[in-house]
Image (cartoon, rainbow, N blue to C red; front, side):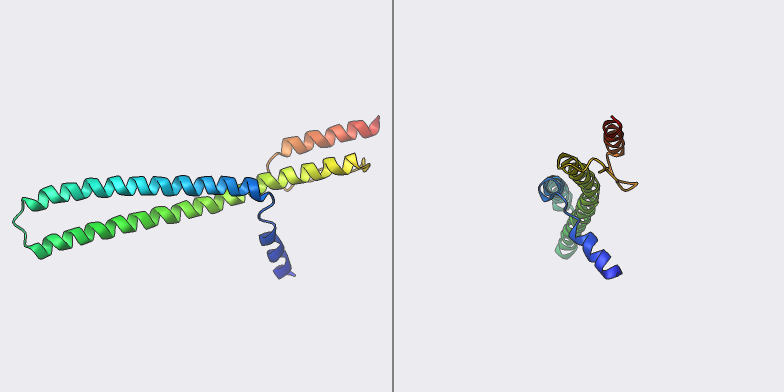
Length: 148
């Protein structure tokens, strides 16, 4: 039974694929753009600084080469950490947009039910879903209309 529930929850993660996809894509693209620009400027600045310092030093070539290798490894490590952070934020935004899209989906479903003649339909959102105030207001309006 838990396998079905887990499969259902994963399958319904994209309630509104267009909306959720746009938000996640924007976050991922903006994040990758920031990583690329930051990495480029960081690496360029540090390499230029290293070039100036190391060209005027009396260090042997193998130590100079080792310094450049360390610099490159640091640059790659920082870039990978930033990419991982972006992916975590994108996953988190998918979860948040799921809460928003789910709420809108449930409100729309109740509106469609009322339009088709089911005056007893009400919006029931999960505690952590967005738009609780909207759902409560809609339910109160439907209660008022049903009493009249």
